[in-house]
Length: 110
Image 1: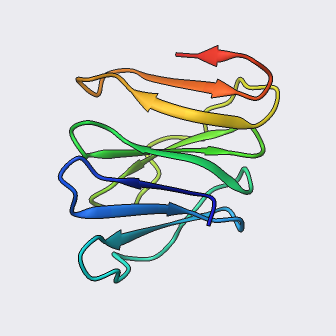
Image 2 (image 1 turned 180 degrees about the vertical axis):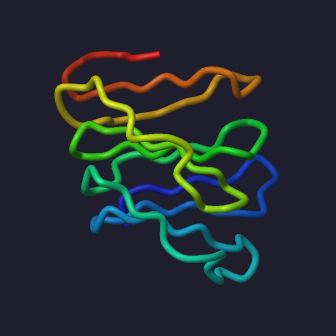
């Protein structure tokens, strides 16, 4: 496991893994909620829920960022790019309308 994050309501735990997958787990029972989410950028380096709990952002070793619909487990759009290397961290603003990502190359992308 490489990264974990609780949903804002505390009901769901997202776990990033070395194999490029993210598991959503019931925070009370630890049981999986659906199938693993699979990224295209390799190892998961960061995970963050939006404050409204509707979206999960995942950053990868390969420098991509994925946005997932938490309710359906579907990728919301094609992987976001722009970092020259690993996405180290991701964070949403307080009203879930913007996302910032920081890379190991020193860049911050909004």
